[in-house]
Image (cartoon, rainbow, N blue to C red):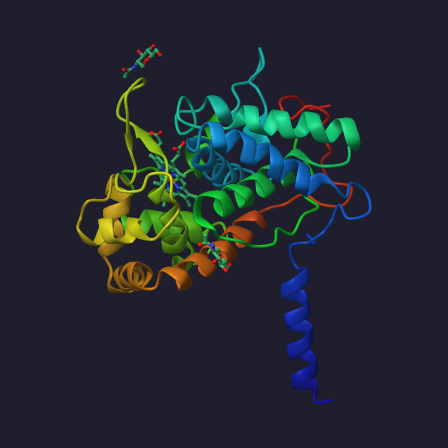
Length: 284
Ligand code: HEM
Ligand SMILES: *[C@@H]1O[C@H](CO)[C@@H](O)[C@H](O)[C@H]1NC(C)=O
Ligand SMILES: *[C@@H]1O[C@H](CO)[C@@H](O)[C@H](O)[C@H]1NC(C)=O
Ligand SMILES: *[C@H]1O[C@H](CO)[C@@H](O)[C@H](O)[C@H]1NC(C)=O
């Protein structure tokens, strides 16, 4: 075999394993984990579909701060203001009770085996399936972190007033591409935004509980809710991605799944790093 072919194979293998996560991670240690989470998510979304938007956003916000380590789930303490109490998350981030319920069910079957970080990743995937019929496998094996800082959330979570350069810098600094950024922004086809602490508007009013590509049509009409949405039209590269996603819904949906998997790889703790929390709200 040529050394070129060998090194290419090596590169491909590295790309497959580079995150250190694997699909079916709990096959031996907690075979029912993914089913239990899916059932919990489905039950919650049946009562309130908006929680699915919350869970997809929660995965993004977890992974952009200290990697996907469930730092977003830790409660503030007397001495520390946690991510969940930072302006990008409070009062808007929702779905915490769904994670608590899934964790409670799983702990009763497989104590201290399934990380809170993996539960978020699975719950986001289950939400995408329920709200968008978007289906993808989630590599798992993440471990939970022990630190959560409000200030770090402010620095790492992109602001709706960002211009395109700032948005691009935010995503590429996490190892995601410009294409990933535009693809993931399609999540703004579901859920709501706060106009004040008590008043909200739907992100995409036509089908606010369906994860579809209508967001891109909205942006093409310059009707994106945030400046950051409409900024996607401000370069020819991102504007073309917006138009393509608006035109080819099935292609966008497949890309969305892959981009969520790449989001889920950001800065993960694996092996003996971190811990498996007993309660997702507090470190052990
Ligand atoms: C590109 C940069 C992004 C910015 C500036 C941004 C900003 C925002 C803001 C300000 C809200 C409204 C929060 C509120 O007031 O309630 C929101 C909602 C939301 N975002 Fe983003 N976001 C971005 C990317 C993403 C990504 C990558 C995802 C997931 C893949 C996502 C998923 C969502 C969802 C689902 C909602 C609705 C949440 C709910 O209904 O509870 N966003 N976003
Ligand atoms: C959901 O997607 C699958 C392909 O992944 C497709 O076969 C099925 O018809 C879709 N279901 C609905 C309700 O659109
Ligand atoms: C984007 O915002 C940054 C920070 O405010 C600023 O330095 C930069 O010039 C802006 N870029 C464009 C293209 O407007
Ligand atoms: C939003 O509502 C909370 C009470 O839930 C109140 O304390 C806060 O002042 C309100 N803020 C704005 C900007 O309306």
